Length: 188
Image (cartoon, rainbow, N blue to C red; front, side, top):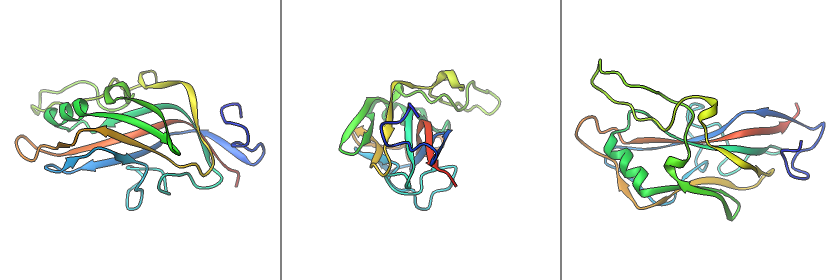
């Protein structure tokens, strides 16, 4: 209960689970990643592997979420040229309502998941954001609470960049923003 502000958490009416909120944005090879590309804004048509939010920019009533960490990941099959362009051209912001609560370069938000290590069997490389493991995630010093029905989203802020369209397997990019924390939900 202490992880939530004031009336966000209602004793005996809510249960709390430690689980993430996450959303995926995919940009095709040859397409542009643009300034203000947003996460948690278009859940329709996505699978559970791509997002676990059901309503754009908010949690369903009476849910609330205490954000303990913000993580950012890209799929490991991204081309190095695309990854370098993304990292050099964008920062990540987390917004609630009309105010941003966290802003930093993408490399700051280590993912704590994904592939670690390389194989020379297939002559391919994998580019990860940190090492897999609970202790290798970006944690906040002070939790950020998404109140019931509050608008929230994440966004990339920077200069438009094109994903590689050709060459050695131009795949575009798949980017994932994950909020780690405590999810308060109505008791059923």
